[in-house]
Length: 162
Image (cartoon, rainbow, N blue to C red; front, side, top):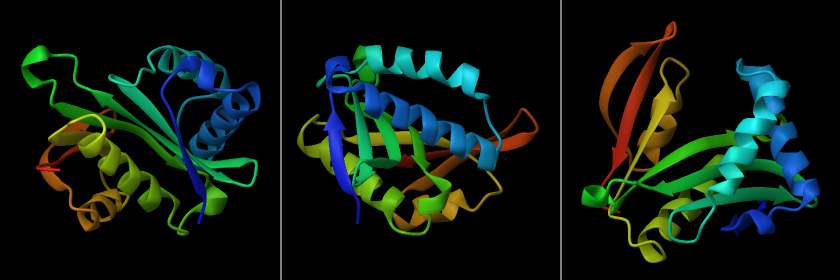
């Protein structure tokens, strides 16, 4: 099982960890279809600037020094629903899939959302037709809607209460 770390500030992200995040995202995109490497770094850097203990956290799974998966958890910006959060970027390196990395990340993320951030509900969107709905369903998530988007179906899922 990988070691899980939680990052709450841009300064927590070392240069090797940043490279690991970019490499993981690049390999996932190459394997599953997604953005090119040149588009990943600026998006990641923007994401890292938003890290803050109360607003947004990054969870990384490490096997030794290698980053093998990661995800983010963000509090909703709307003050009326700031007890809600959203999960983004859950990624497991293709060579580490089916080893419990994503499950470990999601369980840690859900526990942190409830116990440290006081969130009562989480939501996420995933690409339909890849079996991901079944993965999230096994973790207690429920589908709330589907809509067509960019040639695929996007699936909105929720977990509440935490």
